[in-house]
Image (cartoon, rainbow, N blue to C red; front, side):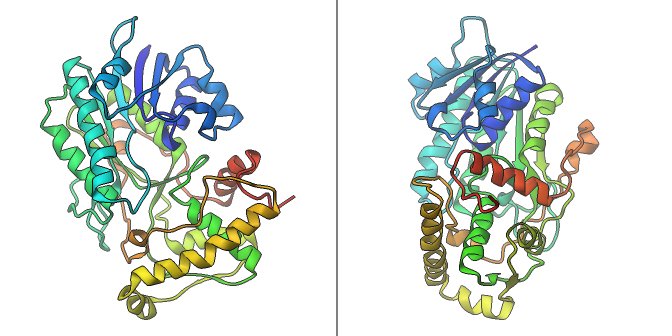
Length: 364
């Protein structure tokens, strides 16, 4: 059975991956490294139970320190069959220096330790936002032109890691990942919808409904990673994207059903005018949403939550995320078990947080 080292393992994807591996009896040992302790990571009861399994070991580690990284890789029972790197800054709109320190430097240092220890396989998580934003679907050979600072740092990580001589490097480029525990993917739109249910106003987004925001469910991401641990080959790159061809309109339709609100779009003409002064527009939009969200949380007795309707300026431009995730199917026989975004899947995501009293239970 496999022995896995997961870097950045208490984050959104990491926690779900650990649960998947435990539930499916995939491994004899899982070592999870993160700066954030599980006790303060907003774990569900099910995630907590997975982390308490006897095959799982958590170690707090500073993945920017070579000395700390060396200790993180150590294990008295032998080496690792695969290292999965999920570590790095996941917030949008940070400075280039932050991404340099928390994403690029971390990835390089962790990969160098893997080279030193001759780890047989190394899976690096990137993002599909590195592809040029256009109306043409992007497969793994698509034009590269990152449209967020986070994606710019991820592309640089990819390039640097290819130069290090890792024995078996596999790169994963997911579309917008959603599901239980998601904070920065679809969640800001869900939270904004909750705000508009309180305001009793029509929720309108920039641009048109056909703006693509392709998605992949976190459970499918976890299943794909496990398949890559078993069958992934050196130098391969795989996109992960469901069959939903998710657009702003498709997301809004589901939010209308869940929250009983009306939604719409400002359209390209007005949006292009707003683009001239997008910084001011972003500030106005967030100001409109943040106070009602705080008020709604207070009304439901929520004193602190990691959830926010805040949308970074980078994400408000007319940049379609249009991704072909079929290569992993044709190459390795992968099957997306959650090919369509549904009302039930979004409700499951919301329920993850309502159970933890981090999202107002509007349906009591």
